[in-house]
Length: 150
Image 1 (cartoon, rainbow, N blue to C red):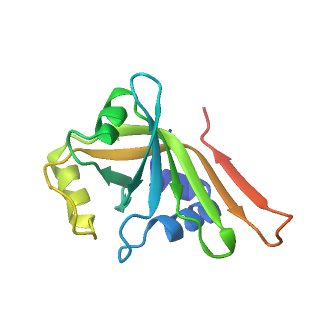
Image 2 (cartoon, rainbow, N blue to C red; image 1 turned 90 degrees about the vertical axis):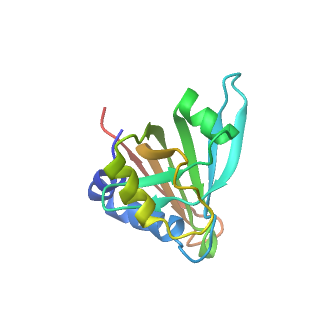
């Protein structure tokens, strides 16, 4: 699993679709985060990904199911809101809990939305798979897939 920066270097066309759909500082929630709880039940929550020069992160409200799921299992799938002409983007992978105070501050400084608490947990999204789908014709989707090298 790799950082957004490394993913973008490896698959720039797919990453460009993702950034276009996941980074909308003027719109609030721009993606749906899927997680699994301790009992194996799926969860889905809206999120605002935070882009820095190092990677992509989530600031997650403390004591929420989303935070518990990410800390317990770490796996995620993030699907961006569907774009023009039904363009889609999704990444999967695992999170890394951010403890370093300098890194936390860089993430907080990059937040463009008003609803967050600087003391909330921050997670970096480490990517193992990505998918971008375009629909040049209704019956002919083009699926661009990427997978991190093992």
